[in-house]
Amino acid sequence: MTHAVPAQEDGGATILEIGQQPDVWREVAMRSDPAVDGFLSELTARSDLRIILTGAGSSAFIGEIAAAALRRHLGRRVDAIPTTSIVASPLDYLEPTTPTLMVSFGRSGNSPESVATTALADELIDDVWHLVITCDADGALGRAHSGRSRSRVVATPERTNDTGFAMTSSLTSMLLTCLRLLGPATAEDGEALARAAEQLAGRQADIKALAQAKKQRFFYLGSGPLAGLARESALKMLELTAGEVVTYFDSPLGFRHGPKSALDGDTLAIVYVSADRYTQRYDLDIVAEIRAQLGTDAVTVISSAAIPDALVLSGLDGLDDALIALPYLVFAQYLALFTALEHGKTPDNPFPSGEVNRVVQGVTIYPMTENGR
Image (cartoon, rainbow, N blue to C red; front, top):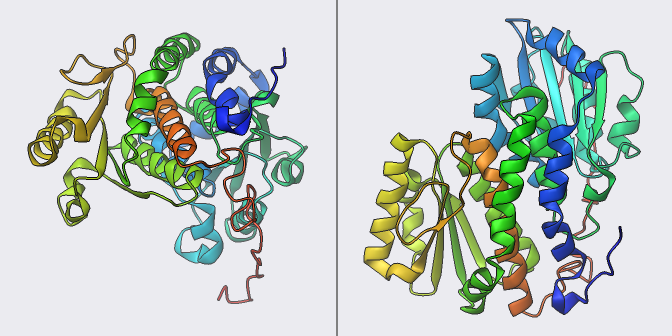
């Protein structure tokens, strides 16, 4: 079923793509491909396997969110490294003699660094395999790995190939796919996550009220996997407002080591509370500290546990922070969208003059020399 795209002042395609995520997650969580499962089971049985999670921009932050959960679940080395870092300095990140599974994320798979990263891995690593998770199997990355014996291409549902500028359902569908294939996510988790996102859809008026305050500085704070979420949240706000607001991200503990200097009366801090009770204590300490400095309304707390003065998402008990990040991301997307609208932006194309593009342009990929430098 297709829906008419709202006018830009009503959220455009972006608000539809944010809103479709609960149904997308239900579908993704129920998917199974025995051929892909067998491919990955054989690899992850190797005790010497290294897994690299890679992508550019928002796709890189998928790896930052997922890495710890995969590390715990598989008992294997898992590193999140952006394609932009690998392409610029491959010998600093790729280990020639370490058997490696490279998991590449790409909405379209057409970013210049995407194919270049997997080509560098093929060139520099003796034993390398590829798992490509993309929203467009016909993109450059999907085509490059289609039919290869050491590669598998997994496409998310077609509707997740967002037409809006910012990655929303594309990002969360790739994250959930990764956690389903290699991590702790189960088919049943998809329903719990979808219901939590639906709770946020029902709280749009509250999120709009935060946007209507028109704060000029947004701080996003999260620990562990939620640090990657904080980074993605800050980018989403920066993108959709076309840079008209200042955004920061950090961990609650790291925040005190300098970044706290930027707090002022025109700040909204968003603190993502971990499901881990030990980590929660650090999250709640920074909430109390900022509220003491700027007032209760200066901090919005998102939690899966019952916490006073927090936006609480129920039904997520027992889930890893990497999974809880999914509905937390929906909050961040709505807040960025509604803030952009308050600033008069066109969310599907915040940069109509083309200063920043949906798919990165202008990148030259240079060949490695004989000596790698």
